[in-house]
Amino acid sequence: MVEPTLNQAVLRGFWADKAREASNRWTSPDLLAYELSLLAPLAQGARSVLDLGSGHGDLSRRLCPPGTRLVAVDWEPGFATAYTEPEHAFVQSLVTDFRTDERFDLVLLFGVVTCLELAEELQVYGALAAHVGPGGVAVVKNQCSTGREFAVDTHSEALATRYSGRYPSDEEQQARLQAVFADIEVIHYPDQFNPWPNSRHLAFVCREPRDRAASPNG
View 1 (cartoon, rainbow, N blue to C red):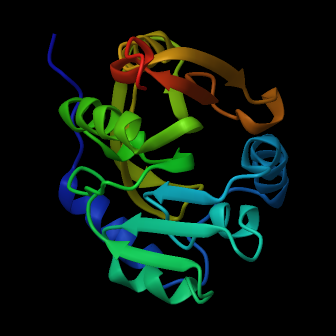
View 2 (tube, rainbow, N blue to C red):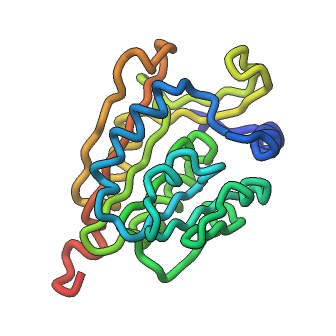
């Protein structure tokens, strides 16, 4: 079976346009409020947050009270203007290229997997686990296929622009994450946020990186 692929030119053009806007979120305020309520308990007490594929940080900036270190990573330099607090750091980088020895209490990968090829997805999961500090958590959220993985490259009426994205099978994505993390909780978003019959919003709450779970020195 031919692996679904992305139109990289369309994808880069789409995000370049979003970087010139005040916010890169196109979902409803209700969905933003739901995601903030979902993440708030996980962010409570976190001293450091890593937001991979951050965009303008509409989620992560709201989750970080004064004094919380936030490192935002995105490939478009235009997103840097959103990070104005002393504790905020913006790094211009592809999520597949980003490297740091720093570990974080909370790591976010929101709406990114649909922009990655399969090999890139697997690469990012390995790096994701390395970024999670002791007792920390990573949250991977995106739309998943309710059946087989598929990709789109078409004009989106909802976004009023051409868009390309890859939608992994929910079961296959969970299995890929389970190869890296020992503890995964899958959160299904309410039906009101899932307008398409072939996809749904899922969040994978990932704990205990396997490369450290078996080590007494973790």
